[in-house]
Each structure stands twice: as structure tokens, then as C-alpha cells.
Length: 499
Ligand code: BES
Ligand code: MN
Ligand code: ZN
Image 1 (cartoon, protein in one colour):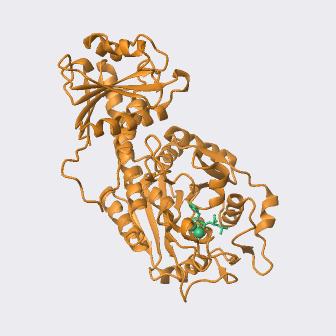
Image 2: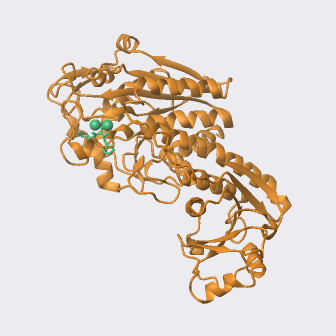
Image 3: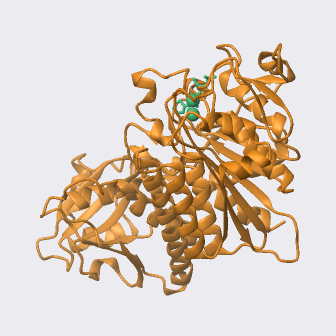
């Protein structure tokens, strides 16, 4: 989709559809909506009067202009209650409007910058949210589907602003939004690819392509190198699969004056069958998405390389397939991680923490700090928080607040779960330093208690099991991979560069 910013009156724009808005409860439309209403002879006000347009969220009314305007149609999008209005409303509304207009075969649409006027949002941020909402709301993963010949899609989006002085900010925001949305779509593509395509090797190839395209350093460690470094936990998970494991390292150098670098680690299980502790059918069905954290890290680095904040960032993605076979790891096995700690395997399905143990140990050894890991780690996190927000756990609540602020700005919500020492009891082993699974209680927390054994310095763990993959579309999030974490990590890197 091509995105352009123009100065002018939306009433004069020629397009398949122009998009205006209305807050809930407004009886007499003002601003651009008012101007369009007048040009249409008061039909919007009339529809409000009759109760057909209420301005509620999810309400989209498409009106044909019948020659009264250069545009063919007007879409009036409800913005909901003014006091609940936010950038995330803009993303969701824009996504829903675009899908609705796509259905009527609109190819070129024009929109006011929702929220930049009466909504009180910064024009730059509002424009960014509009573009994110439009691009991500129209996303579909259809590369394996035969396309119907008459299927069209929105090819051009014009952002129309009356005040010329606001256009540079809107231009800037829209460019930012496009890069972020396209990277998020790339993460979604990686997640939605089936596991017979998106193997650890293909993830590594993808990372190399990203590195070549945007100018990052990419190193891929092979099994022998990982063995030499003592990554027994990661290799234990990998040993049941025909697919060789890869440890993907992407480095962005934005501050040559410093040796310090921030570390982003993403779980890259390309398929989680559970291994010998085999999952049942329902639990296995979406397990091609178990590399969502890794995809988010690769995509975030691609944006960081384009935005060029003044800091160094290293992304680490352990890419491994978890399969059962004659060579697979067994419950009862004991493996040794790179930092020297031994782990008794209770369940081969608690594999994410094993590959992260070695990836985090490696990050520590490289001196990376602070650390953030993103992982579809536990079903227990979904039980606790559903699909509404990610779970976060930390050894440093000050750093956590920075991660959460970055998430907030992206509209990616997080909720903290506790790290009380008492939970550590649950992963004490009789025969090794740790065991890889506790009992049925507090599963998201014991997983984080396990991970903290492999980090040094400030660290935040983001459990995205409930947010990385959705069954039902919800605003700018569609069914399938969501690309969660990409925009949060980029915001965080930029914020860390400021201090
Ligand atoms: N990848 C799963 C967690 C998961 C479940 C992600 C559902 C997304 C949707 C993880 O590897 C796993 O199997 N976790 C186990 C841990 C248990 C064996 C301690 C779980 O949550 O059941
Ligand atoms: Mn598992
Ligand atoms: Zn898993």
C-alpha cells in the first residue's frame, strides 16, 4: 500500500472513499465530518438524528456521494467515547474501516488524521497509528492460496490535513508507521509460515537476508560450535529433530563509542510437538507459532537498523525444533547449560526455557545488558491473563517500568506477575541444580524463576503465549500471528538510546 500525505480539504479529494469520524454521542458533526455533511446536504446529521449513526466503536457507515463530492463514498467511522479515545483506538478503527472499504472494492482511499483535531492526539503519533492500523488491519497471509481474479485491495491511502503546518509531523509519523507496520507484517509472515517451511535453517536465512538488506551483522552458530560452548540445554532440545539447530545473532552498532549493548532474546521453537512429553492434538495445532518471540526480535532489529538510534543492540534467536524420536531427550535426563548449571528434565515440553537458558547465558557472556526476552513460554500465562496482555516478570522493576512504557506506546499491554523467592522451591531438583518444570501451580512464574538462573543484570521476561497468535481478529490484530513485541522492542531501544 502506498501512503501519501496531502494538504487540503477532504471534501475536495477524489477517491474511491474518504474516511471521516464521529465521537459517540455527538449530535452535530464538526470539523471535516461537518464539512462533508454539509456537502452531502446534511445526510450525516440526519442519520445521527435517526439513531443510525451513533459514533460507537466498530460502527462504520458507508454513504454513496452520488456526485455531490468528487469522492465516490464517504465512510463515517465511530471513534467511541471521547474519554476512552487513544492511539490504540485509532489503530483499531483504521483497521476496521480499511477492511470494510476493501470489501466494497475501494482501491484508493483518503482519510482525515483521526485524533489530530478534536481528539487531542499529537499529529505525528496519530498519523503513525493510522498507518499501522491500515497496514496491519489489511494484512493477510495468502501466499499458499489461489487468488480469486476479481479480488482487489486498497492500493493507496491518502492522509489529508487542512492545516499545512501539521503536514511535516504527519509525514514523519506516517513514514515511521509504515516501517513499523511492515516489519510487524514480516514477523507475522514468519510466524504464519508452516513449520515444514519455517525451519531453524530458514529462520537463519531470513535473518541473514534482513541483515544484508538493512546493514546488520549476522552470525549463525552451528551445533558443533554450540557444543564447544557447552550449550547442553539447547542441544538437548534439538537432538530429537532432523532439523539442525541454529543460534542466530544479529548485531546493530549504533554507538561506536561504547562497548555496551542491549540484548533482545527471542524464543525460536519452529515447531513444538512437546517432544517425548508429546502434546495432544489440540495443544499442538498452533505450535508452528512457537518461534514468535524470535520473529519479533529479527523484525525489531530490522527497524532499529533503519531508525538508527544511538546505542548498540544485539538480537539473539535460538532456533530449534522440538520433536520426539529415537534420539530425543527423555524425561529424567540431565543436561548442562552453558553457565554450568545442571537441569533435570521433568517434561520435554518445557523446552522453551531450556533453549533460552543457553541463549541468555550466551548473552551474559557477551556482556549484553540490560536483557529482554520474548517467548511463547507457558500455557499457564494464557490461563492467568488470557489473550489481552502479555505477562512480564523481572529481577529489576525499574527496568520493567521502561519496558512497559515502551509497550504502552505501542498499544501492546503487559501485566506483571510476581517473582517471590518462595516460587523457587517449585523448581528445586533432587538430582540436579534445577528442574525444568514445577507442579501444576504458578506455571508462568516458575518458568521465569528458571530463566532468572541464567541472567545477570537487569532483565525482563515477556511471556507472549497469549498474545503472539490469535484465533479471532480484533482491530488491527488479525487471526494468526500478531507480530507482538516488534514495536515494543523498537520503542524500548529508542528510549534506551536517550539515556
Ligand atoms: N510453547 C509452549 C507454551 C504455549 C502453549 C505457547 C500454548 C502458546 C500456546 C511451551 O513450550 C510449553 O509447552 N509449555 C508447557 C510447560 C509445562 C510442560 C511446564 C505448558 O505451558 O504447558
Ligand atoms: Mn513446549
Ligand atoms: Zn514451546
